[in-house]
Length: 599
Image (cartoon, rainbow, N blue to C red):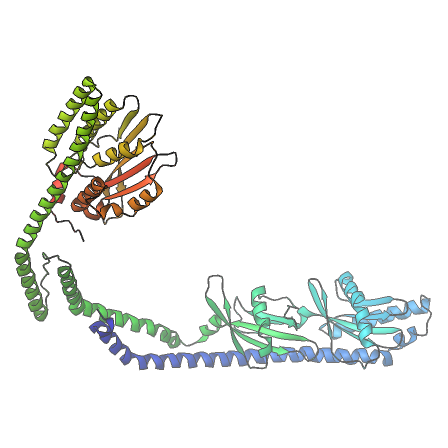
């Protein structure tokens, strides 16, 4: 059925067209409200950030002026250039400089350390508020680079970034004269003020990053969030950016990103605000707007359920009934719906199927009679083939004057004739079939003493199952005729019967598996390929008449539930596998009452 032309599709399209303008209006209203919240939150936090950055930059600029004035206004630093290194006056001057630096550190609240470096004597004077060894090491390591940058150039106001493992800082160095350099250290963490920002939540925070995107200060942000922010540094000229982070569960988490680049160094002040926490400030009705699409979907589903019970379900029942009738199920009867219109249609359908069923009863019974006649004809076709082989064996024994063997063989042949009287039936028990095979093989053993043997391996309680008569006989004959050639060791035929379960059908069923194997020469490759391809069925009058007869009888009786396979054993010899439904006489009688679909 074409779904586009169905009533269900037209109803969905019509209801969607009615509700779509409302959804679009609500969606626009929601987007606009979110934009207003973003603008307000970004404006508030950007003001805080700009104020914080302005304070930091002002302190750095004042520190620059302080460092530039040391060489002109500080008499102790000027006197060091003229005092002898290590003299008492030199040491006293250094101490006064140290005291002055410690006092000035308290005045410049962002400054962590002041230092004075004697390039001639490689002597470093450091005044700091803590972690003396760490900062001494940082200054000593950075001085060669700082001095190289100051050679032959006008001193610039920018501060350099130095990294000390887990501690990063800004350093500013000025050249006082050819011997002395003065400088200051600023802890990066002192420049970061995350407590100033609103709506940061548990997953937001502030951080200072360098030009390479690496974090320079401590932060409440994790490494993934810092990496995400660093990837969007180029957009800091915008008022704000909305960026997304993909979580480990595959969902997206959005952030509002604010940032200001520093004018005093190659670093950027970054703030990330989780949008989820920001939207908590939306009015209550804005949250309700988000639920309106779900409510609309509930309304649509409710309407669909109502129409399904009223219209779609009775129509689907009627359509399924018509499809079952088209497949030949003429016993279909539909329940009468509550609607008067559909009640009339259903009544007409039931009346039509009843009339068609009565018209086909005669054809059905005729098919059963035709199938029964065909099955009996196929069943009797194999008897002359076996009779001819048996008479040839008796003739050969009589020619050899083995009268005792002739008597035994005649006795077995008489048992076979008695079996033939019962073989006119549609099916026989498995134990009867195997008893008949035993008589045949005993005849062959009399013919070839000490050269032929057989084994019957039958599972417990399998003799009660039935199969078409003379199903195993042709394959045992072929094994002796073709597999017994040019043999010196005893030829052994093994017949194995097992039962197994199959789940391929709609309901689990039992399968009877018969396997005939021998230790002979096996099938020739070209013959095996023809047998595996089913070419024995192309010429029912040819040399494979026995095989053709068996498989055709199985297909007539069981259809696709029976089958036949051929193979060669790896250790030598041939194998024939037959499978069919495992049925007792009672079960077979019930199954036989139904027609077999032969395609």
